[in-house]
Image (cartoon, rainbow, N blue to C red; front, side, top):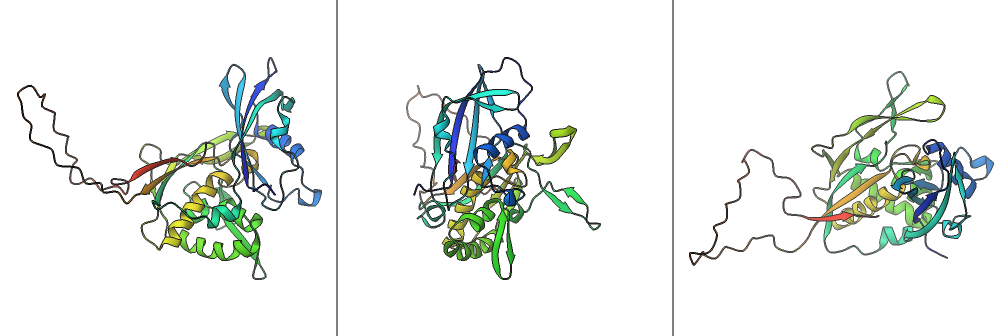
Length: 319
């Protein structure tokens, strides 16, 4: 069996001369045709996540990223088999020119594979599309939630009768689709690890309220911006769980409506290596022809030291 979850990057050409912009509901309708669910499961969480919507590249070209999350069965239709076949997306006629698989590791590999010696202790999470989250106030009304705790950012696990029955987001994908014998003990440790994760703002990219005009003249409220997640301490198992959760976070997306492209995020990890960060002492300058260098400007002592001061930037996990 081919391991899943799987992610594809699709390049499409638009054949329509004039059309209104691609809408989330158009993309959702297409994937409902590609990957239908049984009628009794129609209201249930989808087995896929859109990493945003088709993004224009110029010259009628679009870039789109899709993820299939179910670990028990491959998707009913493989996008790689659709190259050259026209797909209707709203008013657009999009023909896939190329489909590249960019992720195809199983949940077992994600959750149990040995990690690099460099420990992932921090990550910057940036929203690429509005992230839709709601919470209930004292009167039971749903209101937008725009400053998520780490637990909310990684989703939720739903239990009934002492067992796991579903979930959402990164931990929900494990609860719903990973092998149960692996998922339950791993989730227990992962949720313990999440309790130690701290958040901090990203200067210049603070979380802010965002509006997205949706179908039927509705406005969807969400948030945009970024935040830093940091695991200040913990055993190696906590560090490994944190790294796996970050890997899943970008695959599954965040919040509600990820099957419609909302909640796409980019995760940039920061790793702490074993190499020394000590700077070699400068040799004394000799010779009159050497051009003297300006001394680096000293940072004010009052500025707090960031966790990444002596760390190595790990780059994007995907794409």
